[in-house]
Amino acid sequence: QVQLAESGGGLVQAGGSLRLSCAASGNIFLVNAKRWYRQAPGKQREFIAAITSGGNTNYADSVKGRFTISFDNAKNTVYLQMRSLKPEDTAVYYCNFQRAFRDDYWGQGTQVTVSS
Image (cartoon, rainbow, N blue to C red):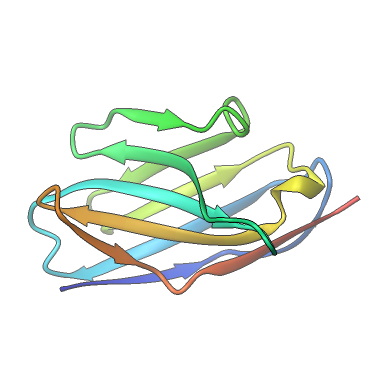
């Protein structure tokens, strides 16, 4: 089992920045990817960013150039640095760890609200 604890959400004005954190504990051996998703009211959960165990990253087009995903091995924590935030970035943000290309673990979610 992998336990994930997210933090860092909040209310920010458009154009501002936030950094989300997701600290992992438990059996993180064989975790092959760490991802961030978000879900806005009335919408499906959507992929935002991913980082592999090798450090490769990829992003949804909607956040490319504004968001940066990173992972601190020493702290077992994945981050999502969000800049130039827009009202349409308002959502609950979830971190996801995939283990052994099979098992998915999710954080509890953290609310991000961007005011115009």
